[in-house]
Amino acid sequence: MRAVVAGVLEWLRVWLGDERFSDSRLIVATHGAMATTPHETPDLAGAAVWGLIRSAQSEHPDRITLTDLEPDPTTPDLTDTLRTVAATRLPQVAVRQGRLLTPHLTRTTPHPNPTPDFGNGTVLITGATGTLGTTLARHLVTHHHIRHLLLLSRSGDTTPKAKELRRELEEHGAHITLTACDITDPTQLADTLATIPHDHPLTAVIHTAGITEDGITTHMTQDQLDRVLRPKIDGAWNLHHQTRHHNLKTFALYSSLAGLLGTPGQANYAAGNAFLDALATHRHTHHQPAVSLAWGLWEETSGISGQLTDTDLRRLNRMGLHPLTTPQALHLLDQALTTNEPVQALTALDTTHLTPHNTHLPTLLHTLTPTPRHQPTTTPTHNTPTQTHPHTTQLADQLADQTPQERERTLTDLVRTTVAHILGHDDPRAIETDRAFQELGFDSLNAVELRNRLNTLSGLRLANTVVFDYPSVTTLAHHLDQQLTHHTPTTHT
Ligand SMILES: NC(=O)c1ccc[n+]([C@@H]2O[C@H](COP(=O)([O-])OP(=O)(O)OC[C@H]3O[C@@H](n4cnc5c(N)ncnc54)[C@H](OP(=O)(O)O)[C@@H]3O)[C@@H](O)[C@H]2O)c1
Image (cartoon, rainbow, N blue to C red; front, side, top):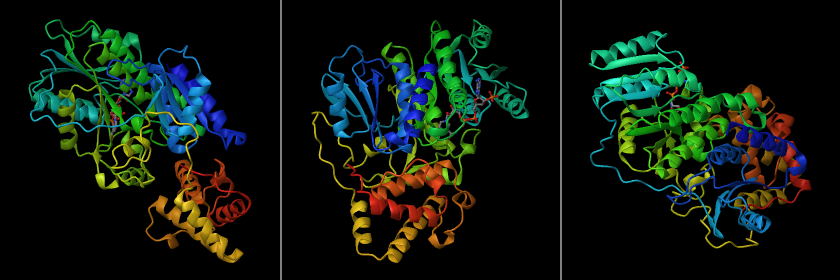
């Protein structure tokens, strides 16, 4: 599975890096990667590819289409189908019996009395020394009165924090085994599972282990991909495979919204989490206990969330995604473990951000807006008409009657305001126009965001490297002016 994702990343990097393709659209086609009905079992490697590509789509809006074809790879008339899909300009589509289906989120009804079933035996937590793992262990012991816990992480009980956790849980009367185990290593996991006493058999597994190593897709290395996929893919697969003969009541996977939404800068992490979501669905269709918890951000800082910068947090905020407090998250956890749905997105969401015109919203969140931007299409249509983006017309109109000096001022203001917005400055005058973006605090993800916003505002398709090639407000505004003088704007749907 890791090899499939690695292969797709390689192709993607080549395609995105080649300016000859800058005006074309890439269709990434999978077979049966998405479960479009409760009875379909998703292809796990294909599902991980969807996670990877969703992030690439966020970094390169309107350039990549994800298409999930019929599970049977011998489907005839591929070219016609792909042409139909391309014409709709929908970003994510599944094709089933000639119909085009788009993914969407549905709201769940809260359970009045959530009562997760962990069985009477041992509960295994991976990543138990991490922030969310520790919180979970405490919750299980103090709230659900679990008495036998097997806690795993690579560092085991070597850290003072881990020793403190054990002491605290034991004071509540729990029997704690805290073991160093790298769950990506099947032998280590098998040896650890063999230590579980027969009188307290394994009855629940909660997999929270994970790491992040962020970076934009065009610069993501194979090692960076591999390191992040391992605890998600190998770890979860080893747990799935090695616990199949245990009588489990709960098998829960800590996933992330990143896999469903395709967070920019996290293609590796999104792939790993999309795999977890698919594994839960796979188990569900085989009548095995399973739930994938696609968490939004937790308020409490962790090894994973501690990597987020203020700009990252602002980006989440613009989508209406707010951090969950620990009590909120634990309440959602109990709800999710009681609900019979294999994949659940658990987040705090400010619904006032869910408007059709919020250009910061990822595809899937648009499905919660009163009028989704991309209406699900059930009847394939060719030659879907394209519309010019409203901002594009406005800018073109504004520039049309201006002198060269006025154009320069307009475009400098446009770039400066956009940069200020990205960096969280209320006053664009705080941005020095001749200062290099890097010196202003820009990272590669900010550069991607700036290019995308300028593309939307100008209707141009600026090169991936534009912010590096024209590294200040003044030089970039000048480049925009040249491009706008010589190019007809690209149309958007
Ligand atoms: N925090 C959030 O806001 C958030 C949001 C969405 C999803 N999540 C998900 O929640 C889970 C927990 O995240 P966190 O924020 O608590 O992260 P964290 O504080 O960094 O904890 C991660 C844990 O995983 C363990 N681990 C990593 N690789 C391992 C391996 N190969 N084998 C065994 N243990 C391993 C780490 O311990 P060692 O280094 O000692 O192995 C650590 O205990 C992750 O899966 C993450 O994707 C978190």
